Image (cartoon, rainbow, N blue to C red; front, side):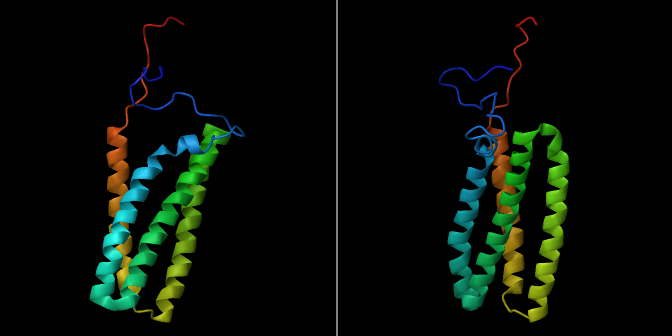
Length: 156
């Protein structure tokens, strides 16, 4: 694999190893665009929800967007940590993180639903919207980021 040439955008071919400064941060360049997209969603959706459904609707929308952001950040950081420690840990850490998040989310959402909070439908709509926005932004980032290249002209 070769590094991008001078002046050419791209990813570094070597990320810092575990324990080195920036080891996890180097594995998270994909977060900026989805975070900005979700922030833009919040800037638009929370006031609209406040106007249409009042303070409870705005709180539900804000909570839904925040829940999606926290969920994706937990996954991203746990997988980045696993990759920094040893790439063979990625699958097991990712699956354990996912399962744990789903169980906690299910318990918390059941508890919130049991209270009869009127902001729950707004929260549900915001969760769906935030997942679509995050996924679209992440896909946009992935499609625009140059892939590492293999230089086959080098004899090994």
